[in-house]
Image (tube, rainbow over all chains, first blue to last red; front, side, top):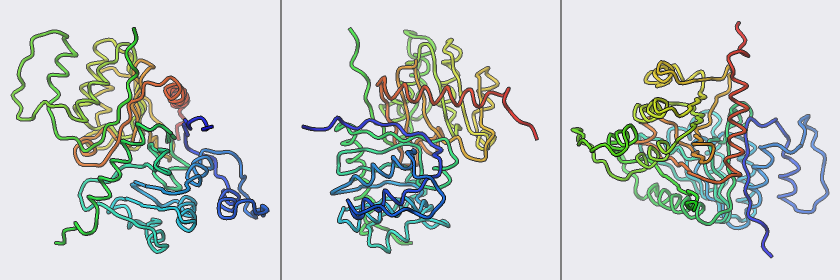
Length: 184
Length: 184
């Protein structure tokens, strides 16, 4: 029996929250919870819901993220990579080198990253979990956006929408293949 | 008999295109088409599809647009306002005064505009047509984004998603009511 397809809308700003318990449970399912010493509540927030959806990945995570500087989301992505999930990340060339960017850290961890070579921006902010669930909206993966901006994220488990975004991802992934780079 | 609900995904960049015929038909339905002297093709592009969806509004258009500087989209919104559609526009305080912003022009045309007073951004980029169709994604309404960036827009005629965004719109609309402004 299949579960009902996920349909969720998340609005930001999100109250700051501790996601240590979520990460610990994903790293070692069933392990006894260790209380986190940080002062943040670990409630149900837009951020914790987003993290939960990402951590549900079992096989693949395809990411197209314009600006990625949120350490919490980077830890979630790294954890999936360590767990054997195939992570592919596309980002924007002009933004990946900015202060606080998590791209270097993710590359260093062994995650495949590709970027554009255009003057235009790679402005998408979407994720596809297991080629099955689409997570997309206005939200860049930055702490500023999560905690301070009005933002939206749709979570859609719908074959038609997922297919369209998966094809866009594969197009971009090929187009940004370093073998095609031009050097000036 | 109700038409099948709209489900559409638009990817950008869009080829530049002429939308004069679309605007003319919306301004005066059934009037004989006058050929536009501009050199742009008037084909089927992501931009022309977006404009078509907006111009389908009959009663209301609720807009939450972080950065609005595209003259073509501003003309479409103005046309709807002239046609008697109730247009409400929410935008970002820091971006509405930038060079090329269309917000002043839209206000001048009599369209109600509200903006935040926060340091965080009003970063949504969505439209709701007739409280029935949601248009949302990564796309700011700028010519640069339309013609140069990798962007996505979802068009969704789905009561559940529309309701969530309509409620977010009404929350923001009330919160940004000028009666609530604080002056320093």
